[in-house]
Amino acid sequence: MPITSVAILDNPAAGKGQSGRMANWLKKELSNRQIPCTVFTEQWPPSFSGFSDIWIIGGDGTINYFINHYPDCDKPLALFKGGTGNDFAWKLYGDISDAEQLELVLNAEPRPIDAGKFNDTLFINCLGVGFDGEIIRSMNAIRFVGGHIGYLLAVIIKIFSFREYRFQITSSDEQWNDKFLLVMIVNSSRAGGGFMVAPDASLTDGKLNMMLCKKLSILKRLQYLPVIEKGKHLHLPYVIYRLGQKFEIACAKEMAIQVDGELFAAKDLKIEVLTGRFLFRY
Image (cartoon, rainbow, N blue to C red):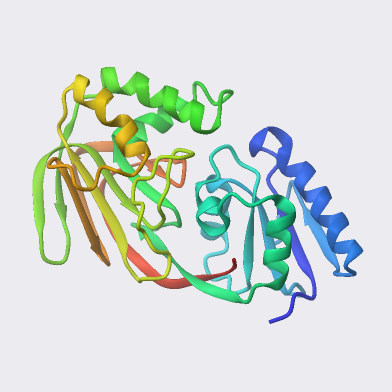
């Protein structure tokens, strides 16, 4: 599937303006290679007929916006880092430079990757209920910091104030009814600009990864924060980790939910994997 024409989707609200600079650079690079492209900024088109590929510039929130507004998109996608956390872009491309990523995308064949769905909303990186949602709510007040530092600051604030809620969580063959600090269903490995929540997660295994952390004292929260950040927590006795295709979460009340870095709210969640839902060049 050769790249013959590219729609470049720029999110001007992402990454403190860096997405605009990336869009201009990509347009110049494609022009040098005689590949037609169109940059869309304020208003994205209703369809992408006439384009072979779609390149999205932004972070996890931007790609979440895209998949929910174009859920039936079957054109090859690429995601260029332009947000504050860029966790999903990191999963696809690692820490390579912009120039290296451009060459990789130009030469890569499209490959299908999984997505997730909760109720009527799609997600592609991760979903977190309770503590994780409250962190995103807090980040709205400190958004100017951004990135991993902003997320870490919000985490530290919530470590001292958050109180665990009771959840009833069901998979295809197990059920848990307890108070949990963390309730996360993830498709990818990383969240919060660098926290390795599910270090071994695969985008192509047709499964989602559930990570639960039981109630912890404030001291233990502080003690194990760096452990979770490095992805060394899955063996701990108060961590429950499972892979599955469907999960249901019943909350004690309507809860804040983090979905690809965006804030949602719900009381009951039905979650499922969408196997091979989108095509990416990576």
